[in-house]
Length: 218
Image 1 (cartoon, rainbow, N blue to C red):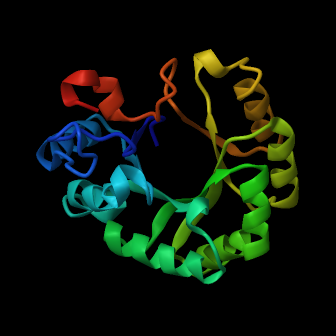
Image 2: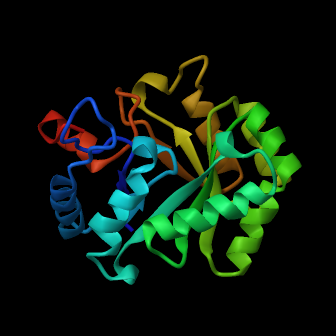
């Protein structure tokens, strides 16, 4: 798999003042160019574009390409979790929104000290394991926003994790708060796949729209 993903955090809009007004026609063309170039990894998320990104991803990718031709990643929103049952309810809705029977990659979104404690109390990692064992998820992981020490604690306690998504770009590599380099080194120490989000110098998620720039209104 080529090492560039198409994120859906910031998609082209018809009305710049309305994050739900996704320009589906333009998005479809961007997806076509991405696929034609040999890239296959797409990432979406529950809250992106006020809940409209997963539907847009379905229309642009799932309904237009064979399922085996692309990889799709989605995330469990920690900030929406109040009780254990929320995991299943949200996950089922995400499958429906995306129009798929399984996710290639499924991550717990935005783990840090506070959200990790909440996730542990509600059984988040056990939920991921069950979904992977049942075939609804192929690979499991989490996106991370905290210190290298917290990251090491999570990876030490959950060796089943395969993927860690980190905020990595040139400006944050030695940033005293974000500590991109040290977090990356921890992920590699535990032999995990480290995926980048927030593009170089812009603190933006890596996606074709941001690479193409302002002409696509990303």
